[in-house]
Amino acid sequence: MPRSKVKLAFIENKKARKSSFMKRKECLKNKLKELCTLCGIEACAIIYSSYEPGLEVWPEDNTAFQNVLNAFLTKLPMERNKFMSNQDSYMKERISKAEGQIKKQIVTTRDFVKANLMSDCLSVATTRTEGSCGL
Image (tube, rainbow, N blue to C red; front, side, top):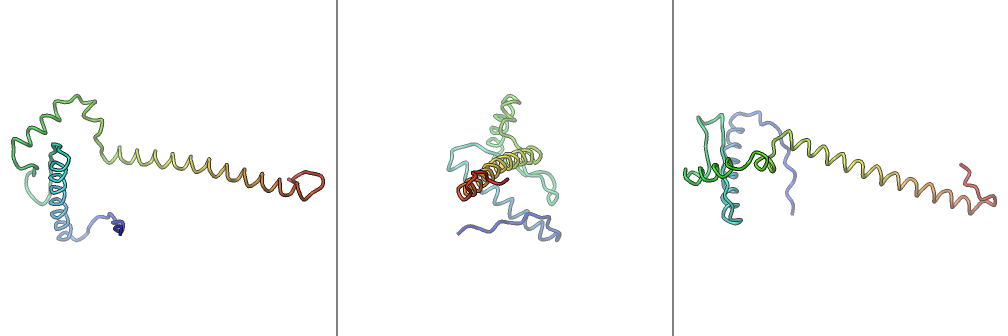
């Protein structure tokens, strides 16, 4: 049974917001740990928070974190940015995808209207003796 879609909105209550952040932070770290274990990848996370001073890194082993970070930083910027995403690039991607779907739907609708019009003309033409569709 699929989960219902979560409505993303700013949490007004400060205590609830902090509690939600703490829970989601732990879930994020657990997911990273699972990815590393199951897929055999190296990953790290840097988490900034207004609730705690400084920053938090995962994995907590400093050498493992440094290895992943150095491997990332030694890549060329073009290769580094290839799979990176931020809110701006994500929204542009979603907009272009939606525009493509709209164009595809316009073509489908146009073809459907043409087919219906042709069907109407042919049905009228068979009932009339002149053979015109009466448009």
